[in-house]
Length: 370
Image (tube, rainbow, N blue to C red):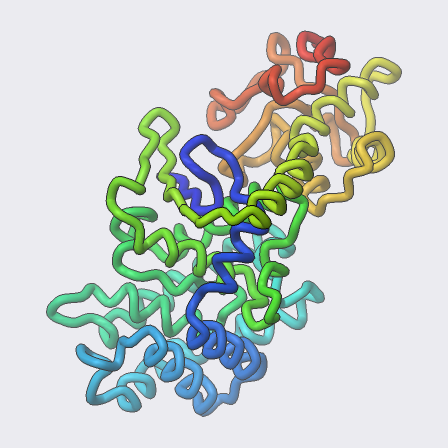
């Protein structure tokens, strides 16, 4: 499986928030207006599919998909058929979002892995159900399907185009695209300490996919030489260039200073090793409290790192894992001991300590503790 990074360059450096703000501010007004409309109108859908047809029609027209092809002459008829095929599932997901108690705009990141995978599975099933209506002699229908689903689930689905399917994601599974997007956003937010969905000053693009799509579409227009695939890591990148005025350079420098905050997994490693010096085991809350107090860090990804991504014997639910901790029993952890603990085959190859250059000098002595 290829991991896709739109928010990072080929050197694995995160784009600064200000660069993305600039990209959003210069992006097409029609896209921002149309997206704001579907975010608002899709909040509550009717069983007859009237709002579905309104939202889908608006997005398809905005992306110029009604000028020719399957949506050109029989748009209403096709959308009626689409609603009959996927309407029930769309309503189920639409109703689940407010019931979850999570922010709609950040729903994808804040629900549990199990809940997310169930929704992603439903998205893929709906994609396949839409293909007979969106497919044509020159298109497999994936673009149209993703646009239609984005129009009523703008907090979940990325409206992907042909170039993104072929050059970046290299998959026909919209569920994979969503997984890639989630991990890319999560890593970017961990680095920058900023919520991606807060970067539109006009407050029209308020969901994660709506902002992410701006960066992906900007990358789409770059020359082929700007597409970079790292075979050693199995990761695809797009370079996003911007004209850097003096003020932009200064603002970018300010955000680069913020980026110097330690990576979350490094903080977890340091906290657990220091706690281990005084006691053989500890609770997840002790690690989290240590990070909050010692590093003044309250990023939302910390609990996930402590209880899942950094736990060697936790299920493999994250593309990026670290073998730093070992779960003894629920609520009790210790440090992972590579010479002693039986490692799951799926966790082999992941690091049991951070790279030295990511660890502040005063904590370097912890790197060889076991």
